[in-house]
Length: 199
Ligand SMILES: Cc1cc2nc3c(=O)[nH]c(=O)nc-3n(C[C@H](O)[C@H](O)[C@H](O)COP(=O)(O)O)c2cc1C
Image 1 (cartoon, rainbow, N blue to C red):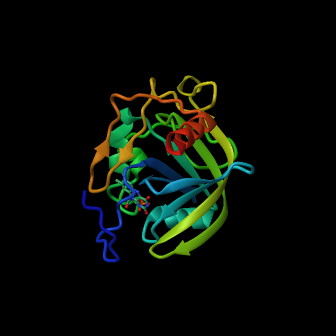
Image 2: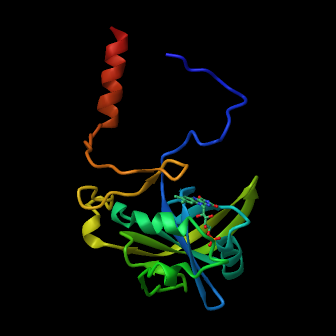
Image 3: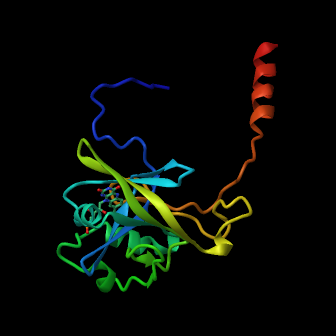
């Protein structure tokens, strides 16, 4: 075992794998879609969701201008769309047309809702803040589109039906093929550990 602390740690990518989503936007009659792996829930009530987007992206400009964005959670079978929307910028190509991306109607915004997604958020921009080389866009989730059968009774993804796309950086993706869901009762587990180290 050789675990070393480094202040010079090279490319900042130790947090991968991250789930890859497709963030959609719409401004002045134009649709766009980009792969986004840097995203996170911010608040449950109200429902707020954050996405990290670099200022050189067309999506950045479109979200700032339209004050809305969509977050589409894609199944692994849609890996091609994730990779392709993370390629050429919408500045040079209409990705939705070129990749024949099917979309459903949004309810409260104008952002494309991707048909292949097992869940999509319609977000209204609540806050935008620049952090280093990315902007954090925080959106209020005003509509959730979800594939009913893809979610279990706790509203968590039914991974027996759909597995998400995980991004590992450098064009590598992680597919989860075999898994084991373990239920760990928090208090029972904590008590077990306490008993183990008390004796
Ligand atoms: C899997 C994957 C994840 C990505 N995640 C992000 C991200 O979180 N933030 C970001 O700014 N760019 C990210 N990118 C790069 C953008 O998706 C890419 O530059 C895209 O072409 C930008 O599109 P646009 O200019 O049409 O908005 C990612 C690319 C890939 C392939």
